[in-house]
Length: 473
Ligand SMILES: [Zn+2]
Ligand SMILES: [Zn+2]
Ligand SMILES: [Zn+2]
Image (cartoon, rainbow, N blue to C red; front, top):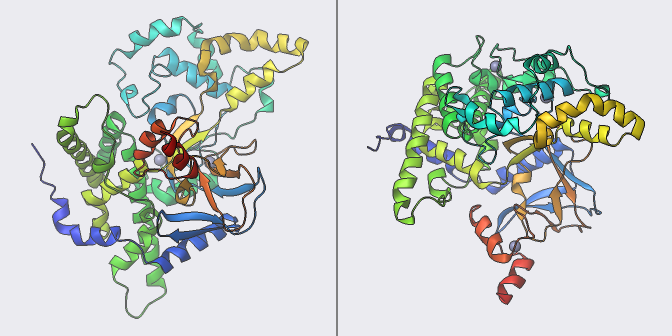
């Protein structure tokens, strides 16, 4: 029943080297560079004995002041969300037009593929077009007003325009230069950056640099059917391989007399990802409510087997002998665990929501005129008109921020923040040398519930609010 995890036999030592904690001076240097590159020089990453890394203010912040804008290292839009929002595959900005966004959404809704399965973003059953979803959802969508197919397709094609959408211009989507028809971009620069970061290895198009496009397709289908976090883990691995190749090329160019061992270049390439991992996925994943505690061992083994299957598919697609250690189950488990254990939600608000709110806010006469056209579309969309782009991403600096139930900062999207970057704003005055904290959960919940949720992140909170609450329980 249990597969033999043969990959680990060869590369256990190499994998252990990748998982070893970095020496503090190296860490410090890495974070200092990162902070400079983000242009947020009023913070620093420091280590303390109890909570490990933390972010500290190196000068004073006022309430509502911007503390940090952190860029995504690797991120994905959830596969189930792809039918709700068309976004740039690199920066997650909405692309196309308001009409195209609405048309696409209604098209998938009419097919019964969108909007009916909310709640479980990781189940990828949308891919199975013949599994009877259409019937299940036909009932619920007919309670809204379904629009004729012709109207929906002319919205998508751009033949039909809605009033005042010129106030909400979106960049035209560029197709992937690799020819996959799956990735779209807001700009040439995003297409290029994604290609260089990971997509050249993970593209299923004809210019793909993977070893087998067929295997890659199998890997992606498996991830969509089980857990789309596997795609994010694959991005982290592809990112490291491509970084390794770049470092190696630069190294050769320098004509170094004695070539550096490949292992140390791999360690250097792996550094950005290495700072996020904590524990293996199958060890840290919370036991679902419907699994009996006595079956915990079997459940964790099943999760490990799932990761093993996914990894074998990925190896067939992008294996690189020089980076063999990255393909050990130990590393794969730690990368997936890192995405499960960190506070990594990616959210971008929808311009479609803004558009309908704008129409609703117009002066009476104009509003009436516009709504005559827009009303049927809003009715057809129902509550889903405001669906945002949702995904998971790793933000290297934000992920260093510790949790508090009485935080002094929060992740917040301002009017101008239209992409997947993480924006951290001060909630109150923060003095110099104070630690910057955010809340990973809804901090208004009662003490016990907070502690349960935080246990999923692998710690028990001892913030001032928790200390106070625990003494009164
Ligand atoms: Zn973009
Ligand atoms: Zn592509
Ligand atoms: Zn707390």
